[in-house]
Image (cartoon, rainbow, N blue to C red; front, side):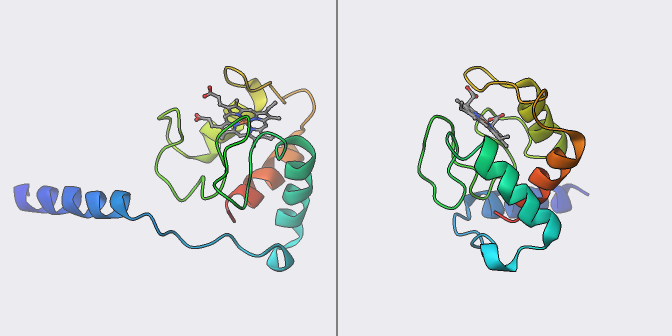
Length: 115
Ligand code: HEC
């Protein structure tokens, strides 16, 4: 029991230290839902968040957002927290809950998962 726990922690450390994650899925390979999410992203997010480079704009880059365990704030990188950020905003990030409906949000999440 103790040993496996130590092993797990060591493995988590190796994963966390691994900086080379897979590149984003090329735009021409996106499925229909991801493609629609890409369009939503271009309309609502790209001015403040780069998606295919790690360049910082107003906000942190979304490149690999779901490949990391945590977002810049320290919140876990999962659908729930990203959705809440989009809907309710965060500090200097404006809430988008009034302009993005549930379908667009689902598609947006599908796109973010390809990054
Ligand atoms: C007007 C600029 C702006 C727009 C538009 C914008 N954001 Fe942000 N976003 C920010 C800023 C600034 C932060 C950093 C907030 C902070 O933690 O202080 C941020 C943070 C985030 C975070 C990280 C939250 C965390 O917990 O660290 C996510 C995820 C995010 N934005 C997603 C999106 C998505 C998806 C869209 C499009 C629907 C979007 N943002 C649109 C400015 C923006």
